[in-house]
Length: 193
Image 1 (cartoon, rainbow, N blue to C red):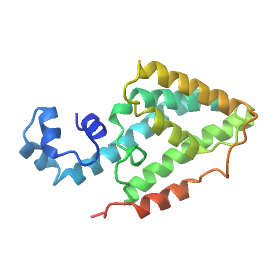
Image 2: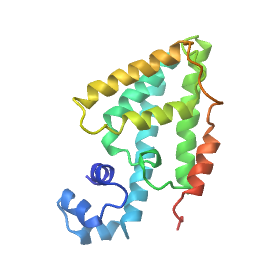
Image 3: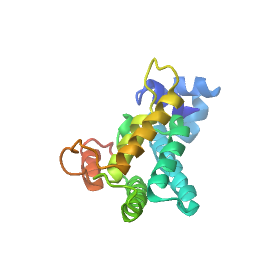
Image 4: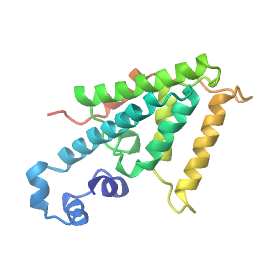
């Protein structure tokens, strides 16, 4: 219950609003979370866990690298309302646990991409950060849309088609490595108590 309201109303949403949406009193939330920041911290770690579980499910399917990326994106889209993440506007966590979870996601997506390249199914100069940024974009529905699941599924197909080809459009600049994302998060991070 807390993740969708935090996504909809932003990281400054009052605990009272979250409690009301969950049908509990504020005191109930305070028993588990000292404040809104503690709740958002827990929601962010939960989101990383969800994404790593998706990767746990996709890895043994024996799909091609390109199809593995597609399956990850499709499954992330299905749980988008549960993903409270820095690329969605949540303050970045730089705790060892959060950093390790992000690095695991990055590493596993890189393996899909490497497999896709070896199979000649992925030709574009893409890295895991590109997939992660794209997943962040599709898991937050645009306002006033005529049907987000359909629109987002089309964007996933277009993204995968782009990975499969060496289109005429040059990809600007070098790929953004995961370490650069961590540096950006660290510069905007919450104090980790």
